[in-house]
Length: 138
Image (cartoon, rainbow, N blue to C red; front, side, top):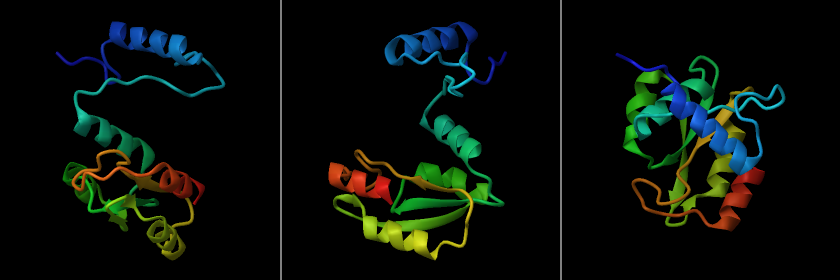
């Protein structure tokens, strides 16, 4: 009744081959690259799997745009992760707010930023290339 978690085997194999052809990385087979393909049934499924893979509620901190996509919050709030809001404006996430949030953070191991850089939900803003670079450098 249910297919394997990464997706239907023939589809996953086709997508791996496509990624290898397109990007030159032997997806799922290289001992030097730990990349693979997973098929999701929708954005919520993809977000949930990504958050579960990246975050440990007992140890990690997630920085989120304020406001952010309510669908992500629907999973994150019961998941129990420490969420730290980062201010946004009409141009997206504010780098100075992100820097300040990081400076105040008490988590020393792994921290993750959840951002929607293009057509941010709910604001609709798109992060400029300058801001993207500044945030990446932080």
